[in-house]
Length: 171
Image: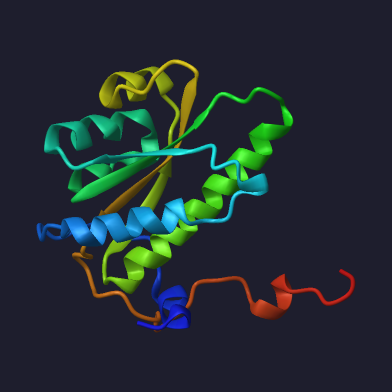
């Protein structure tokens, strides 16, 4: 798939088939996150890959929007160290957003669906994945092959109109 095609085909997938994800494909998705841009090349992130069915079921408890995670074939937990300075809160989370998108585009390129969720219950997350003190979980990316329909450009795009979103020179 070409990059533009992957960008257009990417959508949030929250129901998955039972087809396993090949380890090489999972590594490629993770490498996309590892290669994502990072402010001052800080790379203040760690990615925890969960494939164990029991762990995936437990991850559904860390946020109300994570109920689809047990159905994923793999979930990536994106974490950051607690910031040493307040300015790093925004910087590190922006970097994680870029890593998230890079991983989701890479997954789409491989025909693998992805859906993201936030994390609220840090203590539960710490217990489930063994995250050390001094770190926080920011997001989950559930991965798997879409159960509803293959990835591809949507027939009906549910987005605000392009000309309403894009302003040229001034609002």
